[in-house]
Picture (cartoon, rainbow, N blue to C red):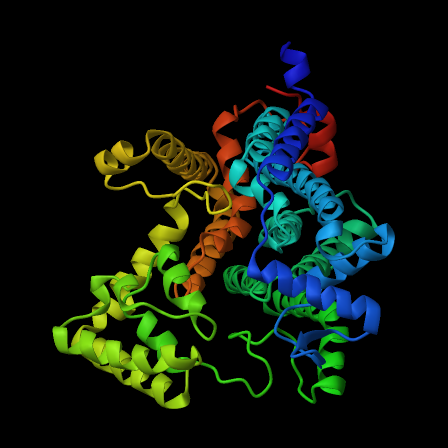
Length: 502
């Protein structure tokens, strides 16, 4: 029985079953799904990357082209489009997500191998693989046509490449790889490969280069510490070239079609000439930190009536302020379209609230958003409320709903705690891996900080950090073993051939 569960095929089969359960039982569609499907359909049928606006084909750049390209490929292969093709694309996403699980397990095994006394990397590989394939928070996103599956895959692959690069660049001794051409050029290869993988991820999620920024900081520190400025600068340049390369066709298309040099999607996802509600978004940032409020307020803008009673009390400091918001909404609700005057009025409210309590806007609310997106029950794709507190009231209203919600909340906290424990073990036992920890935690912190600046803090956006989280969680199972006698410094191939499982 132990041999069965220690085989990767068993874990992958269990992961496939879990993903097909979500696909069969809880398939979901979001507003972004419909937009991606529309763009992919127009791209395939009319050969134009465009939206349909009032019956017209309008070229747009408000979404990166990676996911629409994936949809178009599925449409071309199956001969089906839109809702008729969702079963096929969800099956393809399940396959990609299982590949991500394998890469996450490889990342965990790599961290175990790079310790001074190499840990039982096969054991770590299997534990990390099981944690990844059975993680419901990533698995259930195979059941919705969104970018999370692909963003997670490319992030995991880039992290493997970056860990190898940073470890090799930080040590002035022999390379991690055997002597020869690859040992001489290995760092350049991994620098370019890391950038290229991040660039591919950027075609799905425009904030993916945040990982490259963290890598540059770590590489810069290595250059300062080891006084190898030119060498580290060369690695940074190679990674930048690799990142830009996949984005060049997209930038050329935007320059030719939209007459703008645009490597990424617009931050506010607006069509050319469309009003960006800066004032409204600034006002939201002075009170909003729960995704529930996005459904009630933010995502109704320019399409639905916004009810004053749906806005939480923390959005108003005084009765006079609430009256001003009510007056603005009364005008807005007449045609459910925000005018520039109404947006300016919200902007004035935002400035007053920020001047009155700046710490609330710049410190306490960003912290609340960070805690919310990391410690949510993560059941937004499931038919449950997601409301943990107040416990007694929620239990009395629906004990089944509350049980599932609390269970997922505790499971999410368990994954985070397990990752923190694994990171602590690595930092305590392996000072030489601190730069690798700096990369992983630096990326998690920078991405979280970036997400707290968004007016709609969706918990799904931190799922891209789960490859790092799961790889660290797998380290709790490691056990140090005596390193093989391989001279001054062992190479990765030597370890893979000489180190047994624990």
